[in-house]
Length: 91
Image (cartoon, rainbow, N blue to C red; front, side, top):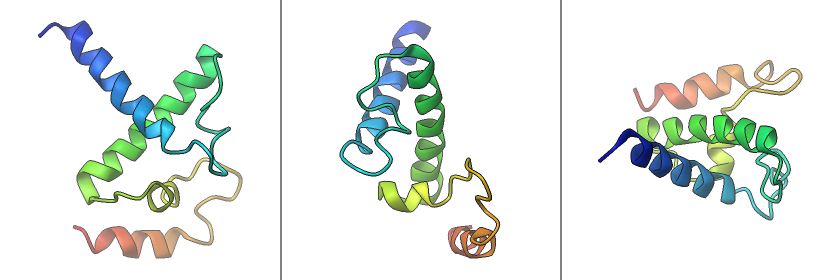
C-alpha cells in the first residue's frame, strides 16, 4: 500500500468525522457544506483531534468529543477541571 493510499484513507476517515457534524450547531466549524480548501483543512485538523479522542479514550459521541476541544475564546476555563476529571477516568 503506497503512502498516497494511506493518506487518502486518513482523509476519508477525517471527512466521515466531519460529516458527523452535519445538521448540528457545529456544521459550519467542520465545513460540512464548504468547498473552500482552507476551511476543509482546518476542519480536518479538528477532526483529527476527534479521531484521537475516539481511539484513545473510546469517546464515540461527536458532542462528547467536541466538549474536550478547546479552540474558542475562554474555552477550557470553566470546564477544564471537569474535562480533566472525565479523561482521567480512562487513564
